[in-house]
Every structure is written in C-alpha cells, then in structure tokens.
Image (cartoon, rainbow, N blue to C red):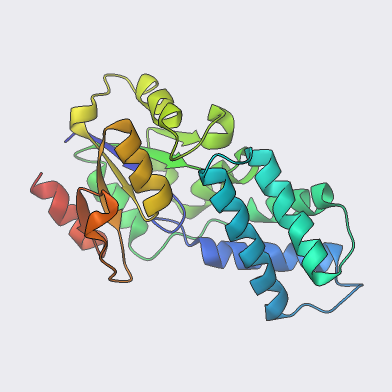
Length: 229
C-alpha cells in the first residue's frame, strides 16, 4: 500500500462541533433580531442539510443547489426571513474560521505520512475546506487536497475518483485505499472507482453488505489494518 485517500469530516475533522459554531455565528448575524437562537433551530437546519447532501450524493442536484436549497428549506420550515445566498455566505465565512481535529487525528496522519503518501478527498467547499484543514494542524501531512467543488463533481461519483487518480503522480489503484466514515459517499465511491476501502466506524456499527474492504472502529485499528495489507 502506498496511497491513502482520507475523507475529512467525521473521519479526521469534528464537523458537528465546527458546524454548530458556524451556525450559531451565522444565526446571530442573520436572524437574531427575528427570533432568539435555540437548539431546535439547529436541529431543523441539520435535517435540511442532511436531506440536501443526500440529494447531492444521488446526483439529483449540483453543489451550489445543495448549499442554497438547505437554507431555502430552513427558512420555509422556521418562518424566518432572509436571502438564502447571503445566509450561506455568512455560514461559510464562519466555517472557514473553524477546523477542529478529532483527538488523535493529527498524530495518526503524522505517523502514517512517514510510510505512505496521504491525500485528502473531501466533498467540502472551496471557501472553507482548505482553511479548516490548515487550522486543524492536519495540512502538513497531506501532499494534496481534492475539494469536490473545485473538481466539478464529488464523491461517490466515479469521475471524482478518476480526477484524483489522474492528478496524483504515479498513482496505482492497486496500491491505494480510501479511508472514510460515509458508506454512501466514501465507501460507495471506492466501489465505483474500483478501489479498496477502510470504513471508519467509531460508533461500533457493522454493515458487511456495504461494500467496504475493511472496517476500523478507531485510529489504532486503521493502523493495524494497514500493517496487515
């Protein structure tokens, strides 16, 4: 094994923590005068956001449509008023100031970078993805970061992985593994691209029918899998 293709959010980056902070900053700027913030509003947004991402992964909308539609739905469900484009911009600006790595994530990639070539594969956006990776302390250990918005197509689309493969010097599918938490994005993308994968499942779930090659419940197990490949 030579090439490790790491997902970012929920695998190395604590997206829930970063998202909560960003949403609260955006809400204060855009909606606080209409209604005080409450955790229920965050839950409403998360539901809208998750539905939008599901549509994107099924190929039913573009990345920009994903970003805007989640706030269109949020405004409709909550009765708040605002411009979805402006709200999305405020949210991304706040998100770019975050970048929380999970405990042990920096050490994991630092250790692995001594043996393997590490690349980040993320369905994030150009405005916030790179700043977040830099802020997290992960950036020095990755040779490149492939942001789906810049590529023009995202995981699990085979074309995204074809782009990644074409832009990594000396890339070999036989020497590569995708490492990520999402069965619908990372693991299905690996299946579509003919790549092996490690499903990062820290909550202990098991889905043997899901198409992953190996499963790891924590960072130590990722290292253990790689040592025996």
